[in-house]
Length: 313
Image 1 (cartoon, rainbow, N blue to C red):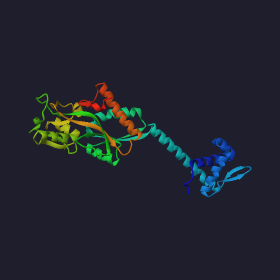
Image 2: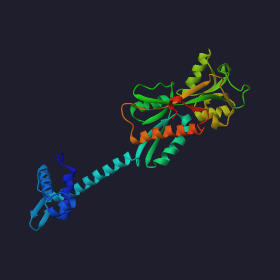
Image 3: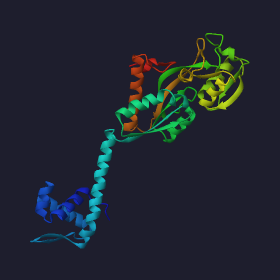
Image 4: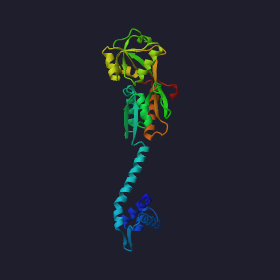
């Protein structure tokens, strides 16, 4: 049984085996010879076998000692590797961040944050999950993600999650041709066939809620698409679509904002409450906030967004 064996005992054992002398091994180990001898005797009692033949001429390994020596070297090497791995993780020379974000943010905000983090911590592996906020919340609750950007309140996070609102993003109307109005109203969508996202997109839920609050159900030219498919259908002239401001800015489609109070969504960063973030994930969250604060200071936030007051530096 090895339950009571200590790493220090194995280190002394290897030192004696290499030096073939207890006194010399004690000197090399920076410990008194009686203390080293006591540790070796304790190891032998724990293992139930003598490890050395002791004589005036020196010290030699017994059969049991010869069997233990390669195992002891391997155990000590593994322990040293474990110490170095932990130290590198704490110092962010290595590690892993499992990060999630909705598709609209993966094509706009997220790449810049990933670039900034990667530049500071090149040894940390980044795993990006793209999905709707509801799916990301479920992944956070199940422990499959360290942290994620989610949209609130379309997907209210559960109590086990810590949520920090970051940005307000405007939702706008994109179309194949410029619309006659400088600003659109929700009622302009009544009786107009829209290009609509599939179920699960928070933009779809927000658009439906706004139309219903205005007293009508929207109609669709086509529905069920992902982000790229929706934009392609708009370009083809199938109808307008309500999309996030960041997406509209890069789409090169004619864009019409909504008249006040407008349509918008809140982008938040969420992570589990029950377990603390890893060093790598905590540093990623800090990098995200630092990027947004600096972008706000230099008036370079993504188009259609503004930093929420409670997150101002």
